[in-house]
Amino acid sequence: MRKSGAQNSADRPCVAVVTADAVFAQSVRATFDAGAGVELQLIRGSIAQSNAASLAAATVVVLDLDPADATELALLDRLMAETAGRLPVIVITPSFDADMARRLLQMRVADFLVKPVPAIDLVRACARVVRAPAVAEAAVDADIYTFLPAVGGAGVTTLAIQTALILNGAVAQARQSTCLVDLNFQHGACADYLDLEPRLDLKEIEPRPERLDRQLLEVMLSRHASGLAVVCAPSRPAEMRTFDPDMVTRLLDLVSANFRYVVIDMPRTWFSWTDSVLLGSNRLFVVSEMTVPGVRHAKQLVAAIRDRLADAPRAQVIINRFEQPMFGSGLRKADVAQALGDDFAFAIPNNYRLVREAIDRGVPLEEVKRGNNITQQLRKLVIARPEKNSAPPAGGIVRRVAHSLAR
Ligand SMILES: Nc1ncnc2c1ncn2[C@@H]1O[C@H](COP(=O)(O)OP(=O)(O)OP(=O)(O)O)[C@@H](O)[C@H]1O
Ligand SMILES: [Mg+2]
Image 1: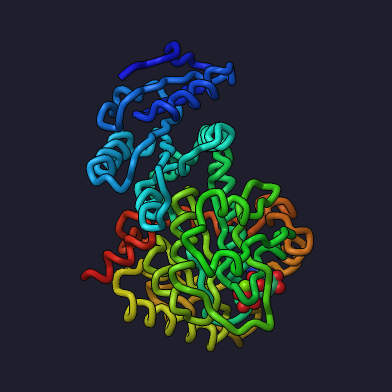
Image 2: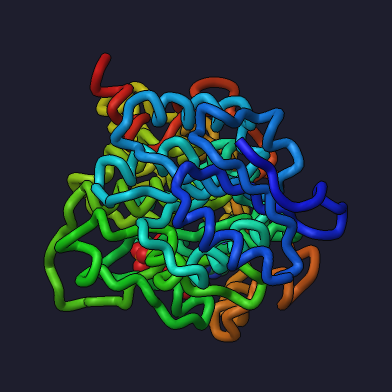
């Protein structure tokens, strides 16, 4: 084991590279010793020669290992646990296979590259990881907020977008803080409401979902001016089809591995992948309207989720476009509360002019009117925690689903 380069100085990022491969070591030295403003800590040997203490000075660690070797994989697992996500790790592997890639993602490895690794790719990967403080934050499992409609046009898209913007604003310093995922593949509206170009290309991913990695995800994200990341496919109103559940869970696993908060806009139809999404969520909101059928549908949907998915978090009903009736007729808040009981979470006020202006301009409600009544109410919802069943088992969505099936 040999260490090259001076101690990490506070103002320069330190890249620690662990490799037993002389050729790779040579290329790394040539790349980082060329005065790229980066401190290099080169550790010649295998992962067995390093641990959290020996890598304490590093800003990012590059581990050259073979994940097909069970011992090396176990050591990587241990190192990831020891560093508890504080230290971003990039793995360099001799070959690629989808199972291994999934395993590395589940371990919260920040990135992986397959040999031979061009110097520029390694530098880019390190730069990306160092620039994204949320890589470390992401080790704490993402909080997933899922919004489902009880009736059409209830306001799921509007509320999902505004919740995502609130969460994103709450951790504005981290670029990769919040991702909004539009799972309405047929009638996606998130991109339109935020005036963004939808970039999720399902045709490219579907034939080989294993190709979906961090880099590809980055390409398929749209970015709102607020920094909010949005995963949304172009609307295909004439296409009647569903997608492979594996593709959807893989997409969500990847998003939740890379963001602190994930907000999902769900379609009304129950697809083959709906169970997995609900089981993987931390908060479930059923959005409905202030009508008798609206309340009835919400109640039925909450009961259906409870019966079908005992391990899913408890669904909470939001009554959107709420208005207290001026005269005797019409539902009152007390009627809704009585009908829904504990399932009733929040009423969001009706404010059509405000919502319409925000949608037409593609901006947050707060930008149209600071301190508006809808954002204020949504903030309470984001902060409030239901008492029971709020956190699904730790791990990615795939692992959570596997956990629930194994029971
Ligand atoms: N709190 C609110 N006050 C007033 N208008 C609202 C409110 N929330 C949503 N709207 C309006 O209701 C309409 C439907 O909203 P939205 O598209 O968010 O619903 P949705 O449930 O996603 O609909 P879909 O079933 O088409 O997906 C929009 O015109 C939106 O401007
Ligand atoms: Mg919608």
